[in-house]
Length: 305
Ligand SMILES: N[C@@H](CCC(=O)N[C@@H](CS)C(=O)NCC(=O)O)C(=O)O
Ligand SMILES: [Fe+2]
Image (tube, rainbow, N blue to C red; front, side, top):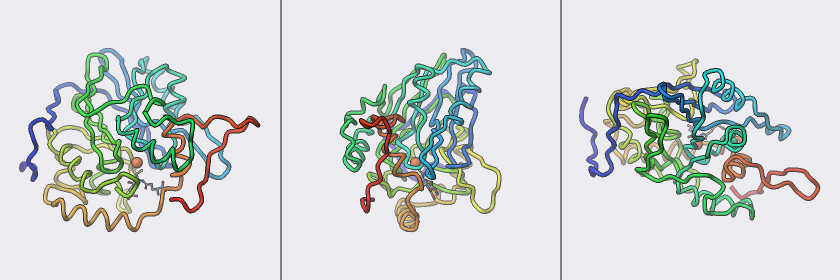
């Protein structure tokens, strides 16, 4: 394998203890093409849940915890202990079940410290006066280089912005949960046109992921199933992504990538659930406070996005 085309300062390089192999289970949500994960340390049973989905129907505003309950059932069936609820970013396409799972498991909700930027933008849009712009709706704000324990393993934090300013990847042994950075090699990369998104930043984030050991297992946050494939998939190695990602293999320059990404972004519609998702997800998956009449409302700003 050839060396990455970009040089990195040594302080930016991650060298995970590749021998450690966490057990990883992916749960695909066909309604939003999201992949949630349970990852655990086989030695101790310590587990983390990554990017859980709260089911939501835009038809009638009903929520359901069926997807989150499936995660809990899998945790229980295997006798695991949920230590962390990890968000790779404030999702714009599905509601997070982090708050629900925090209530059920007692585990803390983790997100990148740049969530404050995302909260500032969307708390203003939704006039969400109950949302402090300091990240305090979450339990633990992490920053690049931080390490959290997971049984006998470590979760290492790599800030990977570009899709949003608060995107992080969680590195656990030979696995990396990369959220919306790369998707499967045959689909490409995440969009960069949300507020605070930046195609240059995404390119650099991907190059940091590409600098991980070639056999590192990269787990994506979505699979949008290109026309050439019918079965959902969510795992590819660094080597496979560097060789074959249709947007950003080793041979693609930053200039080429940014031009492609911005041209494609200009063709994409807003996600179906962007408005409900963001006002819930800046609250760590909690609904806004109930109105005096006892109902819970989400807002629909007109001509604002
Ligand atoms: N059709 C989907 C699109 C969701 C979407 O925009 N997903 C983001 C990640 S949150 C993305 O990067 N999509 C890439 C693409 O659609 O090519 C929806 O309406 O929910
Ligand atoms: Fe996303």
